[in-house]
Amino acid sequence: MILDEIPPLGVSVEAYKRASHWEGDADNSRIEACLAAAQSAVETATRRPLTPRRVRFETAAGQGRRWWVPVAPARELLGVTWSGAAGDTALDAGAARLLFADSEPQILFAEGALAAVPEGSPLAITLSVGPDTVPPTLAQAVILIARDWLEAGIAIETVESPRIAFGARALIRQARYRRPGIWCRR
Image 1 (tube, rainbow, N blue to C red):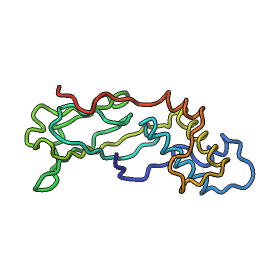
Image 2 (tube, rainbow, N blue to C red):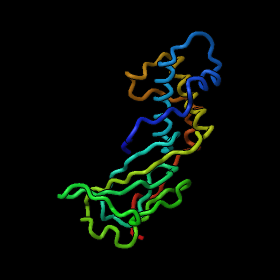
Image 3 (spheres, one colour):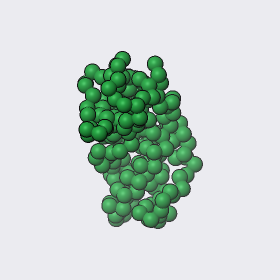
Image 4 (spheres, rainbow, N blue to C red):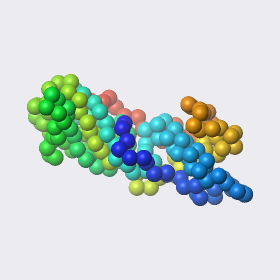
């Protein structure tokens, strides 16, 4: 997944302070950095973006007509392009459509839509993904992770994968999106 923009925080600094009963002076930029890192960890683990954003996925043509989006929910199919010797070429708007956006998002290509695309050519699928509101269980997981990291004094910039507490892992496990195979011939 390639982000076209920096995603907004799903849990604000103020919401974090209220939920964690924060008292005294606070380094808001440090809290914000922990929240952003915790949100990234939750989104990666669950394959569920917490906030709306525009993303691009890259795959190869010639594997079938149906492609399962690796994250859920998806909001809108913004376009499909393929790369060849002549450069990038956009497919017609009717060449593909988004199905089951909330539960099991998938792109269904129209019959013959990929006929002019050489097998193995790079496809770029651009989508708008993410829910209208942050799921409460995932917001709670972000808060738990950020609180643990802040209390432990972990410097987010220097740690590749800080530990995630049991409670947050349980919330993440409940919300994880598992998709079927990437392509389907039908």
